Amino acid sequence: MNISAGCEDGKFFLSFDNVIYNITQYKCYIFASMLKETLIRSALDVGKIMQQHFNGTYKISSKSSINDLVTEVDKLSEAAIVKNIRSQFPDHDILSEEAGELAGNSKFKWIIDPIDGTVNFAHGISVCCVSIALEKEGAMLMGVVYNPFMNEFYFAKKGAGATLNDKRISVSGNENIDSAFLVTGFPYQWEEMKNDPMDIFSYFVKKGLPVRRMGSAAIDLCWVACGRFDGFWEHNLNAWDTAAGYLIVEEAGGEVTDFKGETYSPYQKRLIATNGKIHRDILKVVNGSFENKVL
Ligand code: IPD
Ligand code: CA
Ligand code: CA
Image (tube, rainbow, N blue to C red):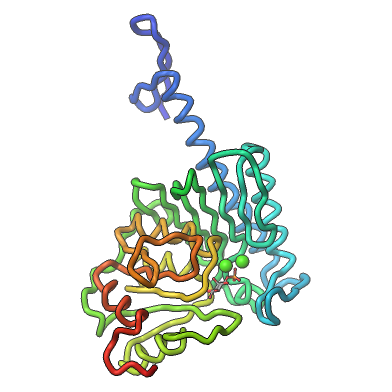
């Protein structure tokens, strides 16, 4: 980086890589850099923790149901992220899967899934990641999803695009639902409802479409963002599962909505994320307005 400082017309300025900043802009620049640095460093720290403990011996417990797991590694990872955030931004709010709401007193909220894909992790399957997002007054500013085993580091900043290992990514161009490659997830606790997860899954499978279930919603979203999958839906997700991933999809040119096709908020359960081109087709199916519906 090329840095210089000076004084022009009685006003102090700083220049980074030939872009000139006044003091207010400079403070914003430094603050934004600190936010990004904390986000990235936290994800990398968790990547190391996950690698150290993968296939190791650690305590595993159940949460809402016998198969909804939390491991000691989730908690270690969460503690490392919270420590990083608290050391830089002690007043920021935090919402983290295992610790819950850690109230601060600020416009900023960090939304953390210390390990997404915990069941995979606990069984030695490397489809798992850390997901961290930063929200300001309800708008998602930045998000990171990092899978250390595949060496895949996804990052997005609102309005600045999405990257995988620092290279720009974009969603697929497939416009045809009949040749779409899809992914979904299933909840740990079954809820009887119209158009339940099995109905939607079976509709697409019976039509001969390849539908995967990877076990990590954050990875599902990133794989839509980088064009591997054309679409993803799930019925029962939490803010920590999706906050980073949905920004990454949007910044990669994709579309993310709820099951009604309305603006997605990570504070409600249902999500459809696609390349934008097959979004209406999936929407019709999850809404139950498809022909020959089983219900
Ligand atoms: C789970 C994963 C899974 C999804 C579940 C989530 P966790 O998160 O994202 O793919 O189907 O709904 O709870 O428990 O591994 O953090
Ligand atoms: Ca999760
Ligand atoms: Ca988790």
